[in-house]
Image (tube, rainbow, N blue to C red; front, side):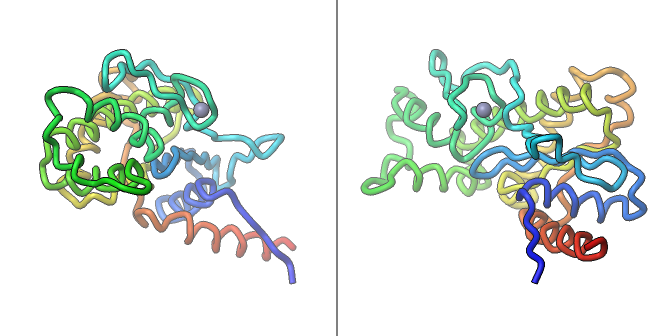
Length: 229
Ligand SMILES: [Zn+2]
């Protein structure tokens, strides 16, 4: 039996492009902030895989973004500073929270109540839900991450000039109110930076399949593979 596999965010990009433009004529990018910050690029219905299978690693594009806690510059999972993933990912949250919760302003924050094994992972997992409920610290982290994503969209727009940039991953799974708020910040940050044509015409929207885009895209990718095999 033939076996086919696909990078999770490439799969997500393929699905969202198929859903958004089934005729396969568009250029689009997919950004999926979750555990890390994955990316995918589809050019006229085909995934951009690159020569080494390493294309569209958009989480490792550098952006200029101020630290959430002054003086604390978190490292990306790849070991570098300034990657977009160092700001927008669950991994980033786990590095930002220890410094944020040490600030006098947050010494009584409810996240301090979570203790024990894997404390920082558990605390990081609570941030999205607390942001959705209006917690000041968690909401300000989400807004700071949204501004970082807007800057990454600007970099992506300048490299591939897409019709759409689709945002998926766990970042947009915090309910309609939070998602509308962060998407508004992403678009606003992007438009402030972008060239006029992009500011006016480039569409930034949420993934139609939410965090499931990768699963559906993996099936689509295997189906496409089976057609030519
Ligand atoms: Zn990196």
